[in-house]
Image (cartoon, rainbow, N blue to C red; front, side):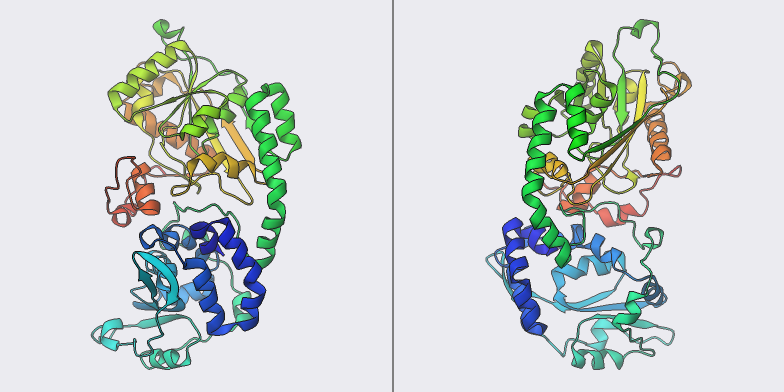
Length: 471
């Protein structure tokens, strides 16, 4: 269902759901072939990144701690699956550190999947290919996710120990805690925020008409109505907003020559609605500076938005001018992050003013994610407001002390940016990283996130060293 929805769209997912009783009835190899055909037929191969950007999150949630401990004790790891390789290889190699994956290949014609799998190759277990040259102290383990008895026998001939786990035993396993992940799950894509079981998928399709109505009502009230009227309507329709402010009033730390300048609100980035909620919480007219915003969202935004060019000098001049006109809100991460991590803060904001208010933002959704790296960004607010009970939490921190600013405190812009990142991370209990927008788009979309092209970088090798020492 995840592949059908995320790679093929809503209609394909609906067709798969309606045919699921028949698929369960036929079962076995035929049922698997039908599912694969429905999910992959007509999907462009080079655009198929669900296996690396979407599925690992859900696979990790299903990993049992007991089984994982056994697997990680061994040296050579071989993964076996009846599922297509494009679905499982990214997860097994990146997150379970499997050395070799033996899985089914999908047929491709003209760069598109035709929905058919290659025939099973029961002779694929070449010991030299899979296990390499034998070593006396070499321990090998096979991770099996298929029901091919012939393949089981071939694998067992290479193993010193065999662990057979029943479904009943799996039910008693504990889920693998996040801190035990071999690789931290920082980035993932896709719209579905829940595991699409049969009942959960049925609930989603039944809720969809109501969700569209709620989205329209929330949208219209946010765009056309004043804050005093919009806020109760949002609350009545299930939107939950919590706002926390410091006990002492936020005072300006501007120097004498900056008294007439606006205040700069610096927040972490969870969705494109962050600046709007900051404006709602402050009950003031703010200007939002953005690094990337779709033309549609820019036109309908109920607040002034200014797009930055990623040219440091030009952006600095533009933000200086905006601060002279009023208060400003900026998300220096440059892109959103769903997990409890903070990306590197661009230091440009620290050079503009000393009157900086950090804002810690967290978002909880229960059906759809309002962010996407590979989907249509104009639909981000639509999916967010289609959630039954989206939760937005804003915590305004103390105004940045003068000793930790550039002009009054003599700090460098990088020191100030890191200080603000750490303060927000501490308030949210998030981990600070040095990862950037380019790292995110390389991991999820295979490019650097720019509009001009897809220059690739080696994300996997950099991620290990991407955490700041203070995080």
